[in-house]
Length: 56
Image (cartoon, rainbow, N blue to C red):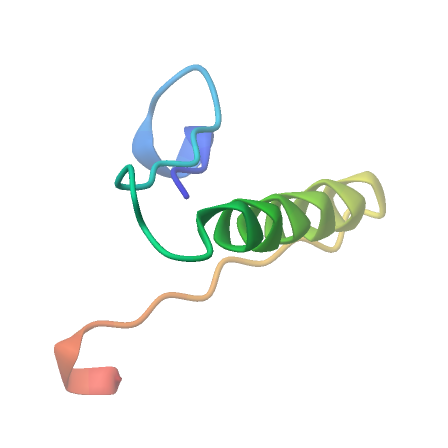
């Protein structure tokens, strides 16, 4: 999922490869994450957690 402000873009985007098994589930899963982000923002409690190869 591309969260707009993290990528300096205007809209949130969920991307997937056509034919991916369980694509509908994966899309819904990512939309669930977006729902949590929006809920945390409304409560002014949103935090960004990131990782890289060193910290995986």
